[in-house]
Image (cartoon, rainbow, N blue to C red; front, side, top):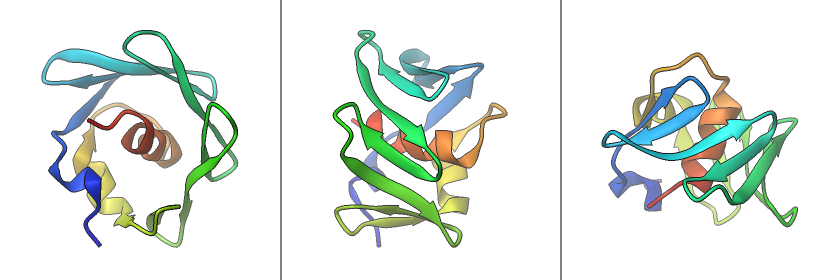
Length: 101
């Protein structure tokens, strides 16, 4: 199903940074994801994406990113939404969930 992610503009991976329309919107350091203001917004562990408070927000399973709100996205769509870079699928999933509009 098309979730809130569908209307977002594309993200691009440049090194450990996530860019949107030429501006840095966040980055990853180890398993931690930070927004453009430098706030820790969440982390990844195993095949799961968590908020900074430890609430599971989504997970990767069977060629889909499943979100706890019931939305899901094919991993091929995720690769279209978050382009570039050599980062694992789980990192792309975390950026999609944690760094949305």
